[in-house]
Length: 448
Ligand SMILES: NC(=O)c1ccc[n+]([C@@H]2O[C@H](COP(=O)([O-])OP(=O)(O)OC[C@H]3O[C@@H](n4cnc5c(N)ncnc54)[C@H](O)[C@@H]3O)[C@@H](O)[C@H]2O)c1
Image 1 (cartoon, rainbow, N blue to C red):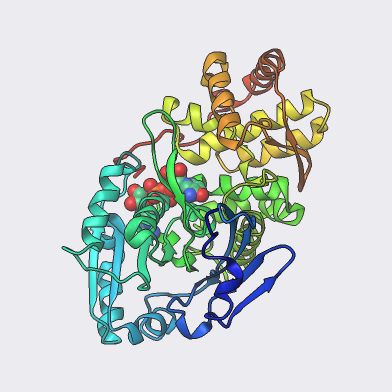
Image 2: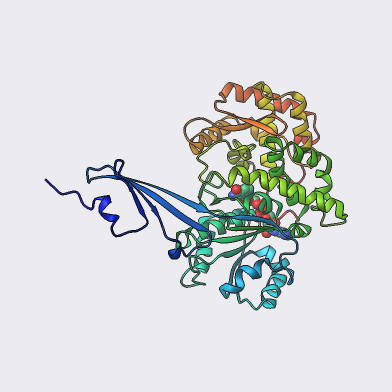
């Protein structure tokens, strides 16, 4: 008979931190703190031996610690936030959106000079069409051995919009298999959604964001003063991600958006021609949107749970957004407005609440209808893909059940989909531009 080896119990003599349950053959392994090298990532695990000397099960639990902070003037020399992170590390390795570098690069360089911290900076063009594996490779070349040779515990600074946060976040997840990064989101989308998100990615050939990894930043800094230079169309675009949290999770945020949303777009979140009072509202809107989003997304690391209200407006749109070349925010509001009509059709939502949702989107100049919705084959294909992506159990499409609440639709038959699309089209046909919004199409040359 072959002797089983090594038996888990034999290990206890060598390793002091093991505890053994003899009956179940479970070993819990807690790595001693003195060996820890990462400030943000910890892990421990459990090994359960079958007892036959031929198999065992491992379950590992790890913690990713992250923080999200609203800050004012992140590149103002007297703001200590970044200096506190980088001065002890002796340098800062940064990836910066090329446009942001043109606008804020001098301020950023002055900041690090003032604090006497050497800076290695890669200005990366980050248009939607750059959201490709090639861009990820270019960033990896900058981070890797022939570039800055970052250490696996060195937090890379990423400064830019949602495109950059997605591709640079993915590059960081690949470098040394996991290198931490600090995100400074310079667009509304990056500040309240893509920036703190654990979902990093590039686009696949047909579907947006289909190749990626879960790798949240260890620190997200949100400084709305960047929105001053943002094209108004991009400010509006970012409002879609705030509306989705307001509709599905936070009725107070919804009311704030109804009352102040248009002024927040016009003043770029109180950074142009606005008083202090509106500044406080802007901060509250940003904080509420972030908190609501991260409460659901930040605690559900691998999207294994499908109670994901923030997927509202994102069930059919990943398929029709690239096909119609819509701005992300407009495609999400088309998806949300259609979702509200579908929810009415299913008896989940009243027409008054549907109209409040659609009116809020329209009051900000966001689209609520696009003719591509009538391409039923495309819609069904998007639905099929989403079902596969979210995990065979169902479609899990979040749909509103009121203002600040939602539930998840598992089945949307082809007949129901067609009826809801037809009714939504009729509803929107009386709106100017058939429900189309302002500056709704993507232009990689910018909206300006
Ligand atoms: N990972 C996620 O969870 C998640 C969530 C939402 C959106 N996204 C992705 O984010 C992307 C959209 O992000 P976005 O809306 O930030 O677009 P973006 O990154 O393309 O930025 C918009 C434009 O503004 C420029 N810019 C950035 N900051 C600026 C500033 N302060 N002043 C002037 N110009 C500035 C950029 O160079 C770009 O031209 C989409 O690809 C979307 O799929 C990802």
